[in-house]
Image (cartoon, rainbow, N blue to C red; front, side, top):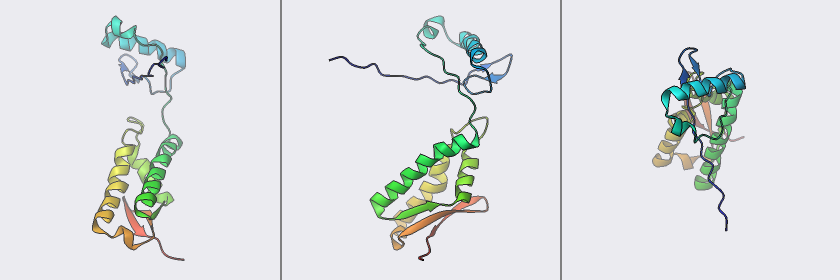
Length: 158
C-alpha cells in the first residue's frame, strides 16, 4: 500500500530590500518575481533550507472581487450552521457584505483579517442572540449595515 506524500506549503512575505517589493504578493512578472524571491530568501535562510523548496508560486495581489469570493463560503457556512443547529435562517444584505469586505481587507495585509472580522462583526453578535434565547423567537434574521457597524435584525414576515 503506497502512501501519497502530504502536500505541504510554505508562504512568505519576505521583502526584497532594494526594490521594497513584497514577495509572493505583488504586481510582478513571474520570472522577475522568482528571481527577487531567490535573492531575498538567500539573504534570510541557509542553502540547506532553500534546497528543500520544490516550487515557487507567485501570487497576484488580491482585489475586492477576490475578497468577496473568499467571504462568500464563510457566510454560507454561517447560514448552514444556523439553520442546522437552530432552525433559523439568516440573510446578509449588500451593505453588510460591503462593510465586512472593507473591514476585513487591506492592500497591505490582503484578506488575513477577514475571518476575524466575520467573527467579530457577525459570529459574536449571533452568539449573544443564541445565549440570550432571542434567536429562536424569530424564524429568520437579516444582517444589515448601520453606519460603521452591523446589526442583526429579525426578518419581517410577508
